[in-house]
Image (cartoon, rainbow, N blue to C red):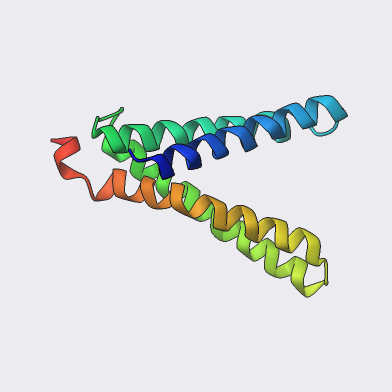
Length: 122
């Protein structure tokens, strides 16, 4: 794992847990809006570390299901962004697109880990 990925992983964790701290400090949002970002950040971090170390973690079918769920959620997020663009709410559209672009390397690693690393799963 090179320095670039360490910076990316640190940024993912900082943003995920930063969202939690901000939501707790401002006393807004429910359970899912407070705790899903750090959970997702930790989950993506575990996936990236397991991929770079070439270690199997649980079963490959689990990671394939997670990949398809993440892809479905990403498509839903982009459809929602298109709706917001249609009603001319541009700031939320830019935030959603920024989150999507920021998550692409994690999704790519999740794809490589679940489908493209057969020596890890043998």
